[in-house]
Image (cartoon, rainbow, N blue to C red; front, side, top):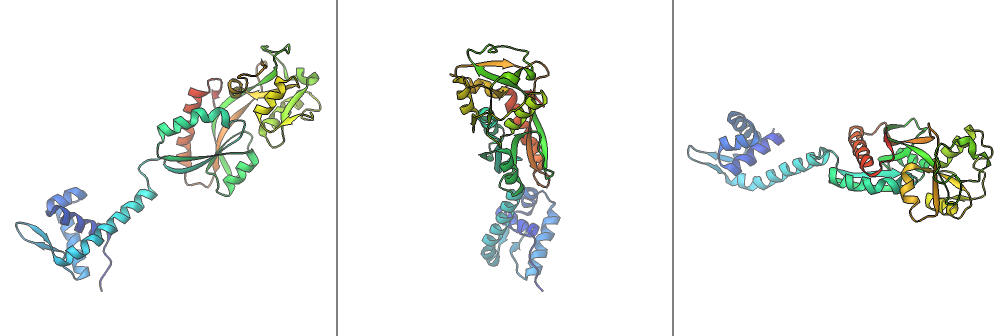
Length: 308
């Protein structure tokens, strides 16, 4: 009964046909000459076909061997292509769907994207900006591979890699008495008009929590809410109130706006930013490397934050 050739046997045949020399063919495959000879002979015996004509001076491919050689090459190439796809030489490669919350994306991506292009050029990055709950849903159903968001993350299905910590500051109208001030206490906000992002943004929840824990009543019940930090900053600039900003957003959001910035007394309220992925993902080690690229890009592009 004829048996199917092994990949090693097909490699031996292709190498001997190309080099027309058993010693050189064996060296190219990293095996001994007797091992290669035996592998080729076993395949010929199992198939009932002589592929190689052996003589003291030269190795020749028989007519049957010439007919089968292109098929053997195609089979070996297919195996190599399969292996390359399953185990790429580049660790960070192929598509990666990355989710980012809106209060991080505009400030992190300008430093992250060039860093990824430089350090992981084979990575095909797809960026999805959305709120925390929808990013977690995307992770759960496989639409996303990883996401960048702020703690707390209340989902037992995911693991987190800490990236950086940052303080909150207050954006105030340029003519406000706190513009440029330091040492502000959260309890001093009780008599101020506070503006918040709309519900669903984790920054809103964190800011409201800071206020409530400091005895500021009715936090988050303002009539003015916005879907983005850029919009809420315009409201502050127009004198409608003040708002919490993550420190990483200050440089971007205050550019060209009539704003002042006030800083809290230590320990200032703030947030920790993490990389999130499914616990069951087979790419967990790869995501750890991606997290390190993130940390390095943050250190270069966002000097106001601290490595977690």
